Amino acid sequence: MKIIFLGTSGSVARKERDNTSLLIEEKQNYFLIDVPGSLVQKFKKLNIDYFRVNDIFITHIHPDHIYGLPAFIHARMFDCQSTINIYGHSYSLKFIRQLLSFFKLRREKFPKIRFHNLKPNCIFMLFGNLTLYPFKTRHCQESLGLKIKYKNKTIVYTSDTSYFPEIAEIAINADYLIHDCFAPSRFFNIYPKLQKMHTSPEMIAKVYKDSKTKVLIPIHFSGELNFQVSEISQEFEKLGIKNFIIPQDLQAIKIPHK
Image (cartoon, rainbow, N blue to C red; front, side, top):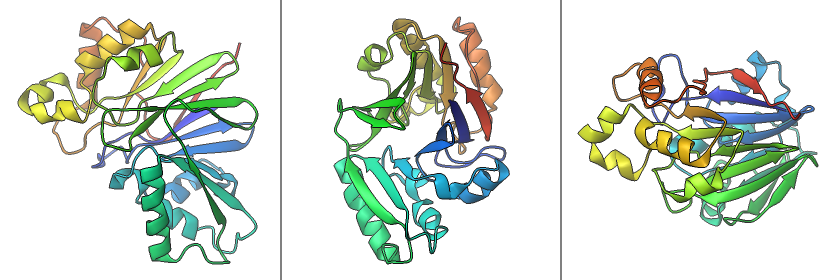
């Protein structure tokens, strides 16, 4: 299995990073997490047939997580034999129904859309090998994170969230923790309101240590604040975290299962 980082920036793209989106690939099966823009171009760069991407999880409905969804479905014109499954919170699904209806994308020449209402702590499975556990995060009323179990590996993805103590229990002994990391901690002191929406490296370090996670992967770096992502790396090192990966856009990380 591979995790492909289609984008790693926050709501405002950085020069070298686009809005955050992940793709899980397992034996040419694909599970897409969030749909900002330009994904078709990225799939082509990666030599991935985007007509095979039929399972989509929406973490929440802030624009940078869903604005590319109508365009992605529109790019599947005349693919009317396929079904695209969209998973998410009931509030997210209600909004997405309205959005797609506005663009008239549920006509006969586009793929059928099937909506799956996910509640925190429910379980659903994909491809026979992936078991997924959505959980509530602290970002907005509908925001969900996802724990993914693949054979003997556990990956936890928080998506956008502020710190909450329960995340350490959710991620306990995880192999990979992909965690919101909006900006260096100094910005959270300058702009205290950030603490209600996102997580600082200082608090991520606490989650990492409390959960005994093996590998930390920070993501969703702010594009509107002036800093170099290398500053986040330096802060983690000062906090005593050595086993972390700063992902680049279009980077793939292979998840071994032995």
